[in-house]
Length: 232
Length: 289
Image (cartoon, rainbow over all chains, first blue to last red; front, side):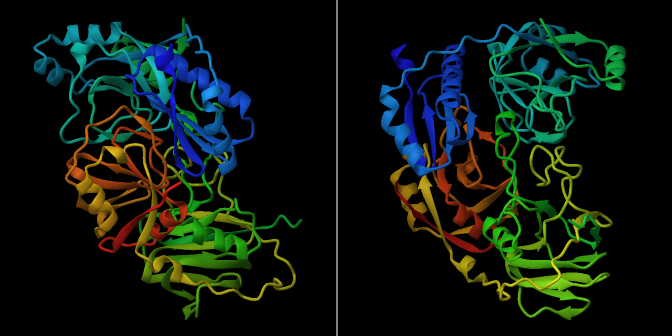
């Protein structure tokens, strides 16, 4: 586990990050979540903001002294990785052309049948690493390599809320209407962010996601009577 | 405490008028941007002279052509950009603190210097708190920006006597500097010597592409570093994007990003930048820890 020992970089007097020179992975995520837990427990009241990326944890300290103390002690801190959640959220997705506006283009580019593309995407189980990009947007790992697709050269000006897309080595769901460069394969009726709830999201980093194919009728029903996602 | 309420009504506004406070610290783990006043120096000043709490909400105006009406007596303070401002068609002499009588109309005309005007009000504007802040943000607050006809409540429990403060005048001299101080970011070391020299010695100008999310600079660097794993970014982070363009992230920027993070501007430098218009020149100066 020696290579999971992070480097601590001080960026400003009160901002720094724990950083790993590794590719994103479940193992690294477990180590990051372990550090998050440790920091929340051991530095109570000293941290203003703690945020996660694929290979770093950003820490904003309330005072420069807190950062100095942490940076000075880091070599003596040992943190056990968290055990990753077993939860798999089942997210209904309608992969009809009406919603999956780029299905044809992506399938053509990969010389694949549209149905095979949909099967590949919905059979995968994806791991939530963290939230970013937009409120409630989950950064997911686990997209099969054959579905890796460069982002659109010219981003779409408006991608609908709930759109499920692929871009680069990632897949994800747009929690709100936004410009975006990903290829859209379908849409979910599930809401990903509720600003009047605490927490405003239902999933946590470490949980997993699976997309469940639904038809147009079911989609319409769920759009009218929104459902909360369930997990198994 | 007198609970009576007044309100301002926006009779006219350009794009980019919003309510802002210190922002949503503590919600970034859910992907929620920090938000808050782009120029925190000016926003803090109006709250200070009004003897408000630092967390009280102010009005941020980024375009000339704003007109609003006050329904009830209040005490306001104005800072930020030097603009032609009138109250009931009488020009105000200097940006500062003032008493407003009911039915007064305030006009914000051309900006002589600076890019954002801040109007504070005694006890702060009272739009809804969402995730601990009143700062406007799409899909978190009811609206992403204020529009003509919008009504914003404010408390009218003023002290009977004028405040004991001598009337302080807003001095806009501080943001005339072109020099923005930064700390090198985690990916600064990936830059070539040539690019570092350009950052430390070159002149840069703001492009037209400037918003609360970020400001793209006109000059480019030769380096086009590879896209990296998505990691935390902050207001003031300077990213080197495709084509060598530099983007300085603003208060509404996303909380993580995949472009190399080459610099981090100080909060003061972010406020200075927030008062620059497209085409204006800036230079960078490196700080070390």
